[in-house]
Image (cartoon, rainbow, N blue to C red; front, side, top):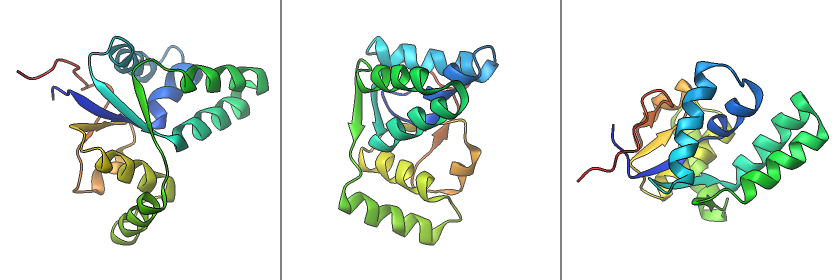
Amino acid sequence: MDAKSIYIDSNIFISPLIYERSSQATNSRKVLAAVEKGEVTAYTSTLTWDEVVWVVRRVLGRADSIQAGEKLAAYPNLRFVPASEELIRSAQRLLSEYNIAPRDAIHLTSAISKTVDALVSDDSDLDVVREIKRESSASFNPKKPD
């Protein structure tokens, strides 16, 4: 799928930091490079910052987590979707309707709120939701449709 606007799940940011040599990390770097170059309009939740910093801290340590948090907070061409009261209520509706984790419900609702072309994630658990299409990092194509 060619995407001009995307929502990026936290695993796309985490993979290159934790699994440097994996194909998933390589594919995630391609997604992030497209964002950096401004080839797509990109969103993620403020929750993503927390997830990235927390995972990096657990796996690599405090200093690396601080650096990862700083880089994510200043990531070029990335817009953060705040976890507002309205968004949390929508996440609760998704949580009630589908068998998904609370964090996944927040990510999905954040993506839906921005009417993006795709949610880029390597988490297949998100496929159960009808309201938005998930695209893996491997299938991501930043080419803008004409």
